[in-house]
Length: 71
Image (tube, rainbow, N blue to C red; front, side, top):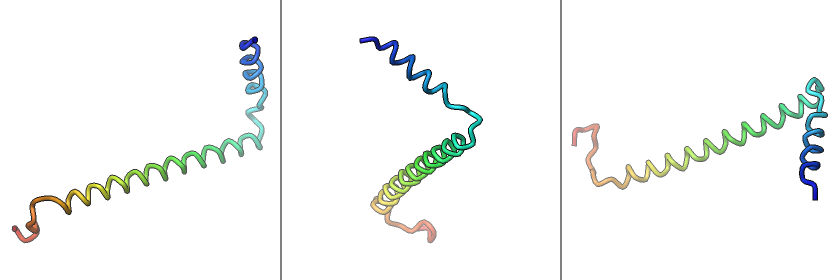
């Protein structure tokens, strides 16, 4: 089995995409926007989990006084 031929064929297929094609650029922009949105949602979701964990830790702390009143 000739794996080098398969890699070369794949590389040639990638190089055949014209970079100045408006349809290709529009498709690439949509893919990039979708990925950026996915990463942003993932980051926000992770932040909410961290915040909930920190809030729970604060609520369960052994110090019971209210710091605003000097207790």
